[in-house]
Length: 608
Image (cartoon, helix red, strand yellow):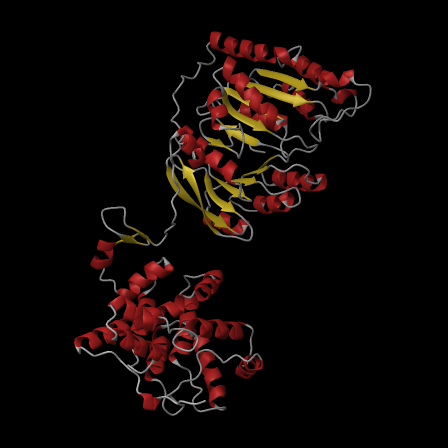
């Protein structure tokens, strides 16, 4: 168990199982406290990834969403608190996964009903590895003016009323989250407020105990007195009694154990929490209160007198000069959310687009964080710009040069191919540049220039499954699928596409590995044994070589490579390249002042 302060004004957390309201409350608390950075570094939402838009004061921010705990911890190594909003069914497994991450120091488990055997395993692992578990069945905890977990302390109005936007002098620990809110308010009325407050949770086996946190508070210089709210059931309070008797706590402790009314019932009563059930005289509220009183804690005669006991203890500290009340500060006003603001006449409108590739808000535009001036000064080319805007990173020069070669080789393939033909016909109809370009681009698909992604996808799958060219081609044949990237209307085995040869020569000379390309060549060897026109075409060459670029550069994970192929990046190269040629054909027809095109009737087979 940690021996000092758990949180600070720079603490950041990972939030498991996305819940909009608790996260927004954390971010609003951050703003209220004057934090410079949001306390939520990332969100873990199994099955989805991307970004969630939330507000940090008046600014809307995009918080990354990750599918796995390991990925989130790797992406946010400074986030050392794990806030687990999973259900009781999965809370234990996800909490254990978090505890096993070296970057995670504190785990807060919100769910009630976590199996006790699972909780015991979590407690044992945390103790063995010097980590802290708060909960299960907890609302969390708060360090005033610095950091809070989830819904701790409730609404912003309650936080302001309890003066939790700035640190006080009181350390507070309770089993109950609901009663914590009540005590935060009470303590704010009669002292200078909370420094840190923890609700350990109401289950029979809490991850950390009342005494664990009291001993921590004793080691925090800013905490001048300690308030403890226990409850009947269990024997947790007795560890605090022993610590007091042994002189381990040298700060004033004001304590109360609720549940004294249980004696009024003839039979055993189960209160709200799983652990709030007296199992004998020693577990009764009366016995615990008496033991704490005898050990030296200030214990009132009733809960109604609890506030007065806290007040008197604090006033004594002030009189003795052991503490100086914290000066009050005025917190900033939190902007209202849209629905509330509409009613009150104030508006905070959300954005509608997220952009991660470029930013034009500064003195000059930036591509993936690289200023335009830097791109020009470094002499970067079109391939470098594509690497920044498409892949969000600066690729090695051989990679960007390969991209540029692909663009040059695919820019045009004469006026007879379908895309160019469409563009020419449209331009001759008097349409503008954009219309003419789009009419040609719309022909790009599985049969014309749009097979690069499919070629990459199928070659990659076959290679990684260890299929021989025979097994790959024949399996595709059985499915009725033509092998993408294989076959040409004009080129033959004895008349290869010069573009393919140029790409292969460049890759063999510059790439660290060409395993996917060599596999595509082996497939071509087999298909040529079937028909002389089943050659590796430019789509297949670019698709296989781009796989080698992505894998060989060492700058992409397997997941990123799959995503690049799946989204359509590679077909994007053909679209970009062919746009150059289609624009050229449009200008050519306009310059030549060609009339409206009409297809000759002798070139049409008219039949019944």
